[in-house]
Length: 312
Picture (cartoon, rainbow, N blue to C red):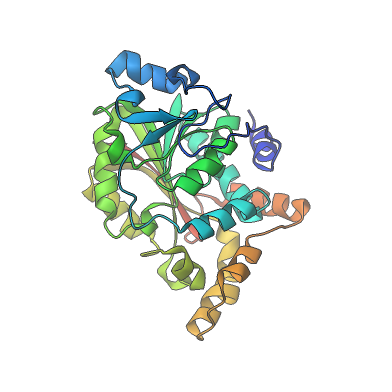
């Protein structure tokens, strides 16, 4: 699929299956969930002897993985608010289109495990772009939202799934690491379960001087620079294939409308932040996306960092 078509997919021309569940999405409510619903789950069963039903129990048509929920998980109210805004959010739509472009640049994997998938909006975009995606999200509200988008969505942490070593073709951590006090723990587990030829794809918020109230409300521990992100990844045993700033066109607006007011003591509530992420005329969004596609990899700043890394 060419890049413009990816853009059209990201801008909402999707058909999702409505499912009322919070673990694994299934096509028909009231039936027991089936491992046959996912080619990737079948591959793990046949090639590695790993069965989801050994670690999860079916309840009312879903798989429920027992385990603790990390402190980094969004509160249900904030997760629900995000779910309401993501479908029409210009920021999510542009960022997701750029992520699909970025992943295809290094060869789209046969399947992707998105860890910390939130409301499933990225997993939905990847799936619609032809990348079979399993969404792993510890928040019940987020996993339910992902399931309603027709994504195979498991309510769990990556660690609680106890996946076989070197079994996954690709993992996505999209705006996840910044929420963790000790991201090394998750990265170590990603390194363990990635196939030798597998890739880890990441996005994180960039530039510490762009810190704002939005970071505080989202529970961010930090914003990264290329230097701090690549050091973290290398320390966890990864080889850096690429690390690039993205969303450079938003640096000045974010500095003026978010970071400067925060430094001056302005602390808007989450409703104001959500409104900033909301609707933007499609023509303007297309214009921004077109510019960003030309800039990525060629600019020294951006509000996000994308990375593609390989396990050593």
